[in-house]
Length: 127
Image (cartoon, rainbow, N blue to C red; front, side, top):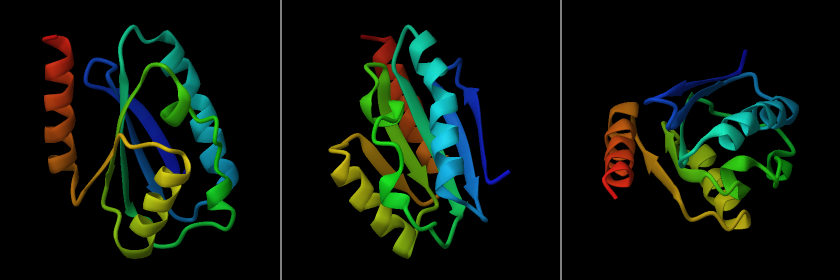
């Protein structure tokens, strides 16, 4: 399966791993499968997406669901992308600009991404 996701950090984070081969339909299906997590959450839901295994993006990537809860849901939080390099990172930057989504952070590895998200969650729970 090129895309897997699970809840972590007491359901504050959707952790996803994306690998190849990958197609747009699988991306859209994964995004749609995450909607209940956002709907059922009493707090912000963040995402950490590991794309270290992705070196090629499928055609049609710019058409990935614009209604994604990652970008549109009231419970959306930070989007952390780890392992994106070169072309993949450039396309991700473009997608975030098209979606008008400024809550995305890129990190080179998961340790940095988790450190950032855990601080965000701690700040939210103390406010």
